[in-house]
Length: 261
Image (cartoon, rainbow, N blue to C red):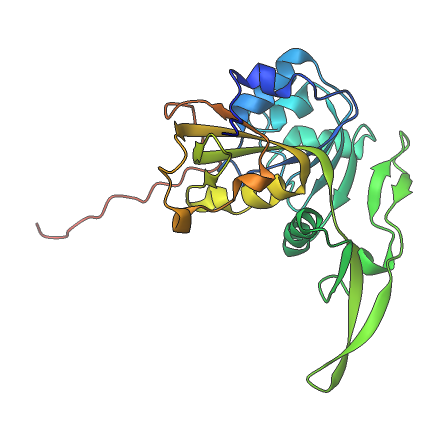
């Protein structure tokens, strides 16, 4: 039997070197692989190039690595909840490849599927295709690195020519993901919004490390209910169901009132 379980998060990430590229799951703060992120923080890994939908918040998720100056580049679709992210980007300390959310999802999926690139309508007629988006600023506020011009081709769609922009797939050295359940073979089940980016990030990593709340034996997961097959997963760490989870923006409705009661 192939047993992919590791004893701890620290052991599972120990061979991630400085300068590695990582695909990291999470949607907002849902499904952040926080135990693996904190293990990376503790071991001091730096100069990381990370692909993730967002970068957590100032004190949670990938934000803890950002605050410790461990990230040199982010490829993301949304960065609006992290003030330190904004500061580092505008001061030239951090490189950012801003990518439309659906395009980012497909770039990760394509990388895990062996597809080198694809054409999409998203971004046509904007700087996404035409280039010039700031990726890194200089100390004087000038644009030190800008996004390149991308190939645009016309395809017939229902008899109408439409422009599409070429997007290259993403493959990273490692991927870090969080799942609700997993078995020793690496088959994973995700919970609700945590399923948005975790399976895609897992697919894109040459070595996928998954933290799971509950580890079960092979055969205990319903085959029809498995969200990601173990072929994509190389290491599994059980972190327990009591692991802390945070809410990015807690909204509470005002209590209802009944007039004349």
